[in-house]
Length: 134
Image 1 (cartoon, helix red, strand yellow):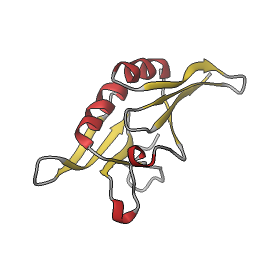
Image 2 (tube, rainbow, N blue to C red; image 1 turned 90 degrees about the horizontal axis):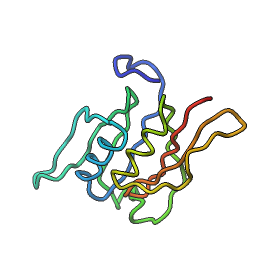
Image 3 (cartoon, rainbow, N blue to C red; image 1 turned 120 degrees about the vertical axis):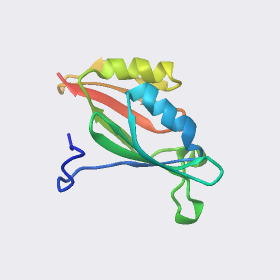
């Protein structure tokens, strides 16, 4: 896992476009124990950008920007990727995410290729592949 205190390390940091960020920040905090590292608000009090982390792995939430074609999945009604999260207890995250308003897309199960995996779709359309090696 990438560590926040090692800026020279190479790692992925997904940038999720969402229409309204405040409820999304709350969802990720509840569903995945995410912490907000920093946040930039608009003049009206809405959130423009939130930098978050799950157990040291960074991701960003950003307001949808139509002119840059950074559209939310709420607008597109589709996705082209799954956000893979390797963690010690994917079952716990699955339960938490469902209770927080996510929808189980693929139930948690063990696969013969050595992974325990399940997919949850968050309220904003992003699909999270929760997993661990078994």
